[in-house]
Length: 61
Picture 1 (cartoon, rainbow, N blue to C red):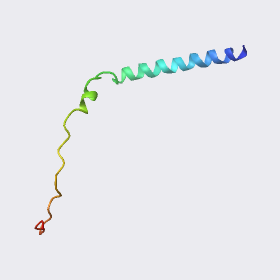
Picture 2: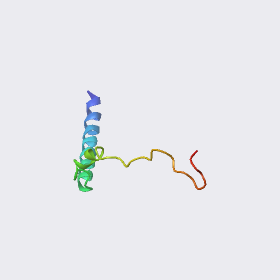
Picture 3: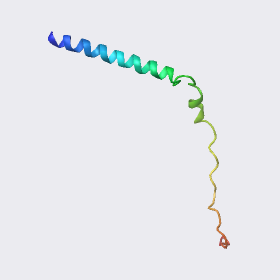
Picture 4: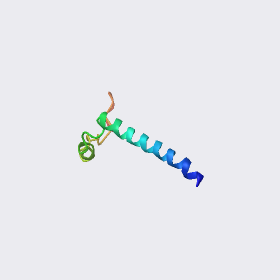
């Protein structure tokens, strides 16, 4: 029973920290644009070169 007297204030402090962290994230704009980051992965990546570039004086043979 004595453990409840310790766990109740600890849980309330953790709840307060979670609410404060959420409020901070909202104020900093973390939830402003939820769609664009998910769609960024679908954009085409820039093409990679198929062969290494030839250096000066290299005839490629």
